[in-house]
Image 1: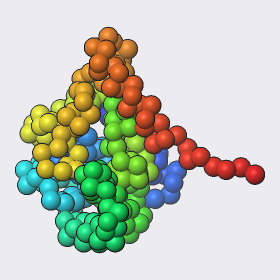
Image 2: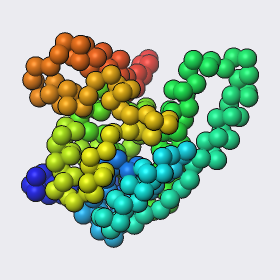
Image 3: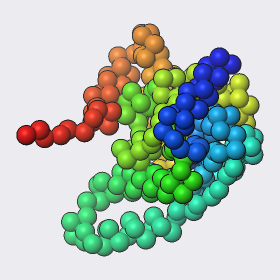
Image 4: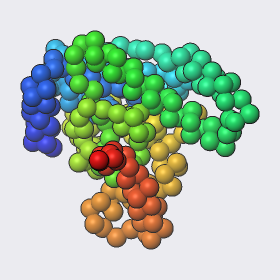
Amino acid sequence: MRNEVENIVKWLQEQVETTGVKGLLVGVSGGLDSAVVANLIKQACPNDSVGVIMPLNSDPEGMKHAQSVIDQCGIKGMTVDLTETHQTMFSTIKNELKNDFNESNEQLADANLRARLRMSTLYTIATNFNYLVVGTDNAAEWYTGYFTKYGDGGVDILPISDFTKGEVREMAQYLGVPDEVINKKPSADLWEGQTDEAEMGTTYDKIDAYLKGETIPEEDKAVIERMHARSAHKRNPLPQYKR
């Protein structure tokens, strides 16, 4: 794991040098993946890395976990509360749609807006500092498309997308991420009580096993393959009309 961390840190430094930016930035949610990335970018750019906490009707415990990550790795931290911004924007859109507003899609539209507001916030801060926005998707999330297009999927570089959730957890232990962050149920903080595995309909352990070529129950395999096929547009280049 030491070698893996050293290689990622070196790769991050190469990305900074190649692109000509000054440093790296990540949104810190209080979850496992962003905690690992915060530690990695702090090592890569000790004096030019920032972790941004973005509460949005968030679980207070999750925000405490996010702050504990900032404190643990010693990265420069800042907090931008998006609760009021989201409320204003979403209610304005709903009012404009009026009778055309589709209530059956409200939760998804709300969740995607949250993710995209966070992305916009990160890029605004990154532009201010001339930093790259660093993504937090692991291999399971990348393969299944479990991220919001132009939301948490809207980033410049992906340092841990080749690592399973289990490997990211091992990396977190090596890096000294707080135990309460390592052991909590994964959640994208998209609505109250939301958890990744409940929303996906399978577990990270099952997805990890599938990615490693191991045998898993057929029902889980079907869920994973369906998610992968349905989310292909998130990973593929944009379709372009050619004359």
